[in-house]
Image (cartoon, rainbow, N blue to C red; front, side):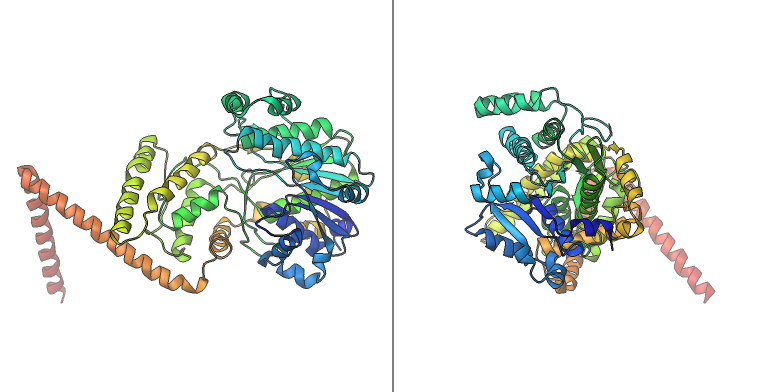
Length: 515
């Protein structure tokens, strides 16, 4: 049996962010690999009129947990949902629940975070820094705690091109930032935000860097480690390929491309898209939890979960594979035939965004108005372009992350552990992964029927024919106008026609002689 899987049996585990994408994958893997674990505590807020138990039922009832429901029929009994609000003092946890958490918890996986790039700094600090600080304070009061694993991001120090497995200090201490958020009004915070985040592109990366500093400073007496994943994508292998339930930046771009709304990306084709599958991140996280608890390193270790250094996936390659995949597995109701062009030209980008996309959106909205429907294309396009603008910083450059600690951990695992908790992406086939990515988006995000693919392909063929006819018509009209206004254009046109006629006559004569 796997040593790591055996370690988590009979353990009481606290997971924050359990209702999020990575949190669900983490829970699923724990139940599937260690069905004899004692209990998983999850901090949850009631949502949309649902009770805590209804939210747990909704999580366990999704496709991700299908195998778990067979392996562990009593899985719902092993999840202890606790009401909590990470923005409140003591997380608003009741006295009885707090006592249980403090006395029983063996391992903490801190996955909760706001991942919005445009989150106001006050909210980002509250959720990514203050909540981490409070959780560390709780952890310090847990006599049975064996390990505290903090999930950060590989982009927390994205202002650096080469990133080591170390904490890079921010110019202003986290405690000062936290204190200032308590008394400054929103207008002043918004005004000073650009100065505070400095060379970082947004409040998300800045607040995650502050959170890492808090972990380092206030977790000195704890057995602690940090995992930094890059861009998290759908599952690669476990429990099945392609599962995804979150609409992140890349997923939005794939959907926009598949619907024909986006056809040009202003990026460097040789840049690396550092995509990492969710199950790979979780396998590494669980291996880190085991190693931290059992081997108790003398210093806090940081582990990078990235792919670009050992199995790079280039922007141009992604564009070609995405186009081919969307032809094979099209999304429903496309407005245009999906294809992706990559360019480094700022002029091309500005032209495409301001003229081509908006012109098409205006024409389509006008068509909707004429047919008595509500125009929506311009609004939808603006949302897509806003998403692209947020991602531009990350799509226009590449980074290098060292992975010495990750490689060291892999060498410490037995062959069985390496198999069961695989986080080696050297054998990841990007073409197959992108196909599963699109399938996952179609099936789990958009809830589209796979049986409708032939009909969508037929619709795409019609769109292609309309596209060719429209372009040919425009070309002929332009030629006719040019010929009517220019003697030189007429001479060139007659020369081309004469040449084609002579070539065809020669070709027919040759065929007749051979016959």
